[in-house]
Length: 425
Image 1 (tube, helix red, strand yellow):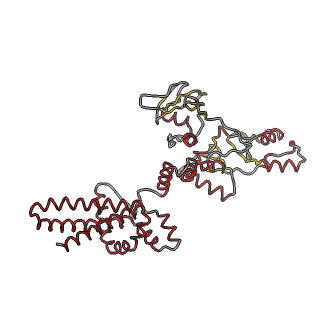
Image 2 (cartoon, one colour; image 1 turned 45 degrees about the horizontal axis):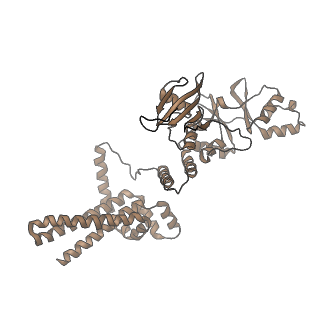
Image 3 (cartoon, helix red, strand yellow; image 1 turned 90 degrees about the horizontal axis):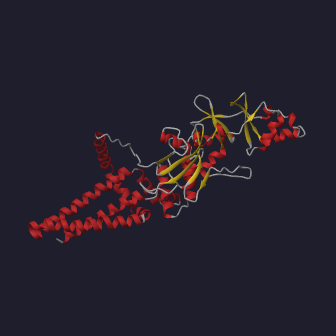
């Protein structure tokens, strides 16, 4: 009998090892393991290889855990039947439930989750040998499970991860922000960096209606005056129509040209000093456009749609601002597109980008279907609202303050407190 008790206790310890290893290895930090491996710890390399195929690892651990649990329960039932007869089944069930739940599940998993990296390193060698032995059986079980799931229309790819690397990073940032380890500005910057692959040029470009351009047929004196008075380093020039961009003038090139003609603006040929315009599609991702800017050593590009029609312009600064937030210098004109009122409401220009509003106020308005606040209201209402019309969606109350022709110029936005309670107007 004492031999059976010792065997049962040994099986419970083995079960605890499997349970703790499962929790620790699935929670282990891959970045931490990579760092330790580069530092010369061979156990970290073993852990990294184990968690590369988590489905195989978890399958092997579950097989071993269930085998030892069933064997321990069977031995306990046999021993209690000899001691108490038919009532031994009840006593075996109660005792093994308590022992397995407390000592083989809760205790080792609590220990493992409190320090998953340390626990993983401690069991790495033993688990590596174990998984190598039971790996083929685990692979067969996983293959069978995939086929069963396929019958129900659920398809799992080999090594498929529930989260992409970007999603894991976003989740980590949100957790750290809630815990106070990340300030909002740092979270926004890293989030903006991850967004570059998902955003398109059309999401951040300066629309053609907001562009400051120069007529190539203007007198040279007027052209020079406009360029020198503009807050921008580069200005597109057009000929015939504003959509016909024929070049881009750089203020530094203009200053050189003025120096060459003894500062006589009438002798300046704007077309001669203009550089060729670079046109990019509006569907280009910001990540690709950033790489293109770096390759060409250029900071400025014109944006066109699929028909070749001018949509707007984009600069390197526009992309960088998606990462670090608004960048202002001594020549920038401060845009008064957002004002917070005393009653807690927010007055915004219709042209304010939704992403900028979300970043400034820590809101979560969707920007999948529209780029600007006015575009969001038009999309949600499926109309061009009149002044003083009000709408409630996405947890906010939108009131149209001013409209010019078919353009929403200004809105007031306030959060809705509850389903039936709002802030006073």
